[in-house]
Image 1 (tube, rainbow, N blue to C red):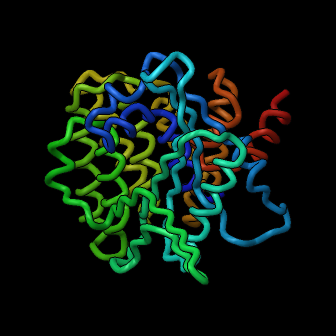
Image 2: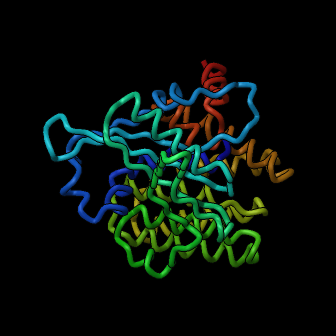
Length: 307
């Protein structure tokens, strides 16, 4: 799984309540937020098993069980797909997900396609088939990141707006200079730290911002982390052990010459970060994988090697 895929999966779990409130104005009337969400990733994998030898694209998909206020045992399923490239078969795949999910659970399903690609013309919205008098149409919710207005998102008090803004900044990579990209990312970080979000949500959103928007120059990634540390101290925001470990491991990495080669340096830094989290936190392997961008298997091997 690519780094940005794992980050989307993690952030959707971290602020899923905000995701619902972002898309449904009456979310607090519809959903019972006092009951925990159930993320059915394993169940979704069973419905759509993947071949370990298959090199076809993997997709970011989430299936979440959400209780409603209609009754004590009334619940629905929320299906989310994050799509980062144009795909002529996307509508059909969304329909496949729907009928397999509905066949298994026999519960109402609401589906969202979060499109993070750069193609302005790619905006699938429904699957349709007509044959000899039989007609079928499946519509799903579509949210195209590229078409969103930054000024309106910045005015939003919903944490999920910061996720969309991060994705918008990432889409600018290659279209503006590295210095301009750095300024955009830093401005977004400042805006995030000024928000009245909980510390846990600020930490989750900041991790998403730092790891989702990556610079071609490794030195700029390090500089950004240093700027964030300064901003956090000025605003007296406790950012948690992830930031502390990142900064410490960066300094160790510099002494060891990790910055030789961009990709090699990033990989080594991710491994060092994972090793520190394994030693100093009680995070499970999936959480560490989402924070570092490493595969779950790689984290499990690192844990085994530390025993």
